Length: 162
Image (cartoon, rainbow, N blue to C red; front, side, top):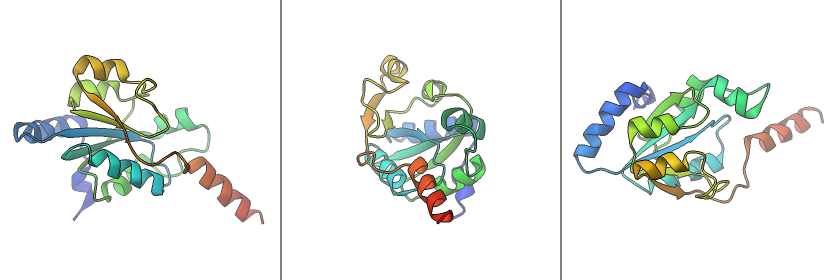
């Protein structure tokens, strides 16, 4: 399978999702930076997929990652990160987004479920008010936050200086 077929611009994705909804399928939206993919990411996305039939993953743009994570990030380009995420079996579609959060995507894509990792609670999800207004259920999924790209990069830097 060519994973590029899973990566769509927002307008095309919205049309595809309407087809899925017309068939009665439940749409789940997950999002993140996914800079240096690790097991915590895989578990988060597998948990998100269990919430519905179709998993859409919104990947932060390079500028978005830089503003969230600081200088020197992202390690991988948005295109590379999208391709890696699209390669995971749990993932149906990937879209790259520019905004600081997925409020706009929730409004356009209208998923049934918005999945966030265990570093959030239903009260701390940034898009909580929009999700509630649209009738989108919030699900906290994945394993406890014991994995981070920041920690992995720090370990690699330590090893390279040893």
